[in-house]
Length: 299
Image 1: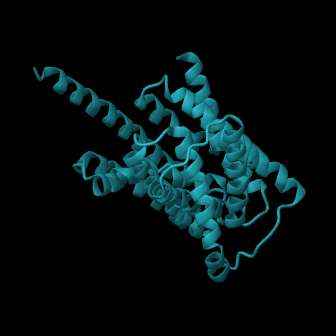
Image 2: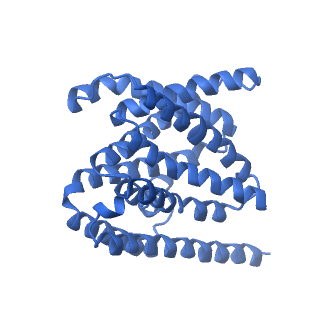
């Protein structure tokens, strides 16, 4: 269990580091994600082929998984666009609202009962974002795109829940990332037309950071995550994942000194969001315990 927790925290810290790398890479957000997916998918196909783990899935499954991968690619595009338009701290703060967005999206897509407690906690998060937005208007575009990134990651999470038990985890990752690469490639002309993001090759420094982003922060962290998942509980996993924005923000403060560029009101706003996330996790724990007791009481 101890080793699993260490692996999980290393993975989460490295995921938090992706925001710092996004700031360091000079490419536009769309090209950054395209090159990241290219390197990652080619590396995974070669790795799986060498290990004899390639499995051909039915075309319907490939299209279904690949569609979710395209949403994942759009999440990454919006996340890195938020960093380029604002900074790492703002982008990660918006991303921290994902758990609360899921309390609204999950009942709609998974047809589960809406929890009013989660709705109230969502209002806390909205209040926090409003405070940050109103006191950091120069980052308004970055905040808007960052919230869109949060919505995309919730959609990916909810849709993955519907298929995660149907396919092996390694194959799911392979086809999802490959689908993200293909989907984003098809969308590149639209990004060029509407946002003027032209084709661009990475600089030598960009290549170095892209390799770190793809091999260390994507492939390596995925295997750490999968190995930890076999040992830790779902609650421990979700609780640890909420630390990703915290780790990322601390790294941004340490490396880029972004705390100097933020309004003092950023901290109360972020505090409201963090408070909502903490109460949300506590509510999930209590609900899980009550459900377990109810099931045990049934003869």
